[in-house]
Length: 257
Ligand SMILES: Nc1ncnc2c1ncn2[C@@H]1O[C@H](COP(=O)(O)OP(=O)(O)OP(=O)(O)O)[C@@H](O)[C@H]1O
Image 1 (tube, rainbow, N blue to C red):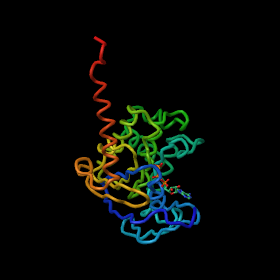
Image 2: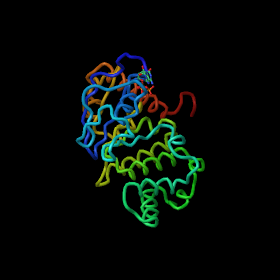
Image 3: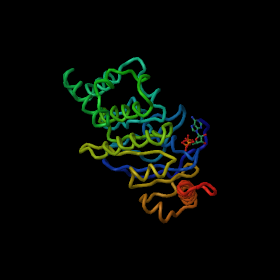
Image 4: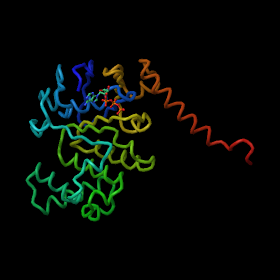
């Protein structure tokens, strides 16, 4: 990474059970923010200021050196490379569950199946016996959410987790995130996306970035109705245009009875 400052003025608080979306144009610094939070910054990069997870300072602490209670789980756009291709999804889930809780093999298997059912799989045993390549992108992403729950991390950072999926499949993944947020032990969720419509289904809080800086931190409702910053206004206007185009096509096309 160059020695120039890529992020500045990035400040927000997120509590367990809450979801904030991080929006902004391409290259504004969303993924870099995610990397700083989870402790996976590019070599040579560092963060100044304060970064607390579960009340403990983890500033510039790489993920491997963090205590389990301050580790943030990351969910990526590319679910295929996030999972071990050589291990069945059931085994991957059981390994994480047993690393966090002292569970017998049988109890871990039951807990893994229960988590998969919670994520919307009707045939959890079939999914447990499958390898990642045997699942669709949407199914893999729901397995990743189950893994994040199993890790008991207080914070999940999801970086464009739905952008590689078709619109219908996106909804199954959003439903899985909704169920995650309803859990009594729900973590905080930072949802990075370009899609305000999806964000509106999940998040109450909206953070808008521009050129490495959070320029608006408001409720999503306020963002949609009264965006304050020009960057926010551009995002909302673009989303409204897309919405209007869709509505226009609901009418019969001219000249066609
Ligand atoms: N490893 C790196 N080394 C140097 N610069 C980097 C590195 N990673 C990101 N950057 C730079 O930091 C800035 C923010 O990039 P980032 O990937 O965080 O943007 P983004 O908002 O996530 O974009 P997108 O929505 O397209 O994914 C960009 O100028 C990018 O070139």
